[in-house]
Image 1 (tube, rainbow, N blue to C red):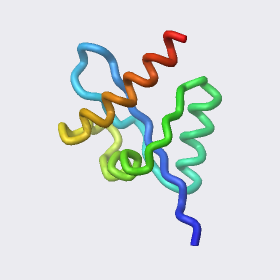
Image 2: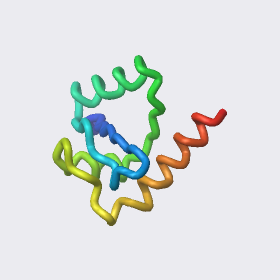
Image 3: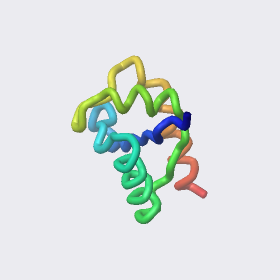
Length: 84
């Protein structure tokens, strides 16, 4: 049985505290999140474990401290992409 696709989107602004969940969902909603990111040239990072955890948060929630390190790696990766 194929597992339903999940996706989550984060917003992070320097000096504004922790990143915030701006979208999360599975199935059709996940596809729409990925499509919008693609259309707007927003980098997509594939991390199943992190996505599973982010999908358990409510839209507008700041990420919990337990996810800081994992999300910091994603932000560093995206920042590095922006520099290239």
